[in-house]
Each structure stands twice: as structure tokens, then as C-alpha cells.
Image (cartoon, rainbow, N blue to C red; front, top):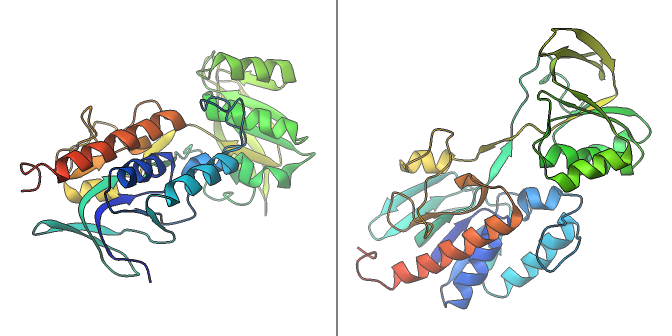
Length: 309
């Protein structure tokens, strides 16, 4: 059975958590990475990562495995352990889970963020019946079929390119006149000849047992188009997984992201934040950097009499 008491508990299993585990262990801190699902987070769902230093291109799954193997050299990884509560008990934090309590002197919240819902009529009805938020998870089922990708950021364009590469008939719809994604991704969409519909939003999803169409509205003219599709992949941003932070009473910004200082400290001593749950630029390299900073700060605080009070 896994140990249940640590100097540092790292809640999450993405790049921020892996980096934190590496830096904590190298500092001599006994740490555990606690992941409610399989490690990797949204990184593991990325078809191709082309901006990780040292790798011209690598799949999200491969980078996840490399990070995991590295982190396991220095910290314990406990999978399928969902932390449902964190409470202060004297000098320790008690992290509650179905598998039993875990105790730690310090905690890093690296809980990430989840896909934002579009809010269109019929969206909930067709989730799993044509609507998906993960192209690399579900794209294979739509090979040779017409699909609509909704969004204008990096993720949306990555989805469009990936789906096009696996022989889906892809159309990309975005509510603005220009994309927010990196120029490299915009160039890839253009080079692939992927159809785009700009300045339009999805008003409604319709169908029977499965998705059959999306009703699009032009935001300037109010023109309505009923667009026949077999699937739709939605990539319109993220919302932070901040339930534990809220329960602890940590300071959050106006969007619900955990506020941290340059050293990764939150508003509560010996609670730190790293990765997508803190907002900012949501990139693997940024999350990993924040995890490294938070773990280093935790080590310094755990050996400083002021922060151990």
C-alpha cells in the first residue's frame, strides 16, 4: 500500500505536477503526485506538440510517458486518487479521498482546467452522440465524415489539422473575423485547405439519436445556415478546476483562477499553485516551469522556521 504521509502533496497529474515532483525529489523532499485519473492531463490528449524545447515534434502521449518516467525517479505517483477536500490539522494538511486520508506539510495545487461548454441549444443532448471536446480521443470515429470544429485558438486549429490528417471532412467556425491561434497553426490550416466560416456562432445542435446538423448565425448579418454534420469538436476555452482552492478560501482572480506570486505561493502559507489552474498562458512549458518554481519554493519554506509556523 502506498505511503499516506508526505512532506509535499502535489494534487494533479499534468506537466506542472510532474515538474514539481522532479524538483521536490531532487531537493530531498518526500513528495507524492496525486492524480484522479491517468497522469498527463490535457497534455496527454494533444495529438502533436511542436513547442516543447528539445523536441521538434512529439505526441502528447509520448511526452507524458517521458515526464512520468522522470518524475517517478524522484516522487511517488498515486493514480486514481481524487482529492475531495483539504483541511488544516495543526502543522499538517489532511487531504481527503475515497481511498483514505493523505497528510502533508505542504500542498501544490496543479489541478489544471477543463474544457468550457459552448452553451448552444442541444449541446448537452448530443455529448457523446456527435459532440466531443477532444479530437484525439474521438476523432477516429468520424473518419470520412463531415465535422465542425468550433473555436479560434490554438486548440481549435490543432483539432482541425488533426481531424483533416485522419481524413475527416473538416470545417472550422469562429465567432470573430480573425483567429487567435499561433501563425504556424493558421498557416497549417490554410495549407491543408480546411474550410473556414468566420464571424459566425453555433446557435443550436440538432439531430435524432445522433448529431445531424448545426445551426450557424452570422454575428453581423444574423443570416442563419443549417450546416449538416456528423460530429462537432468544441474548443472555446477552459475553466479552472478550482474547487479545492475555493474550499480552502484561497484568493482567486475574476475568472476563478488561483492567484499566485512569482514564487508560486497562494494566499495561504504552504499552499502553492502551478499550471493551468493559475491562468495565464496555458502551455506545457509554462506549466512545467511553474511546477518547478512551486516545488523549489515549497522546499525553501519547509526549511524556513517562519513558514513552518
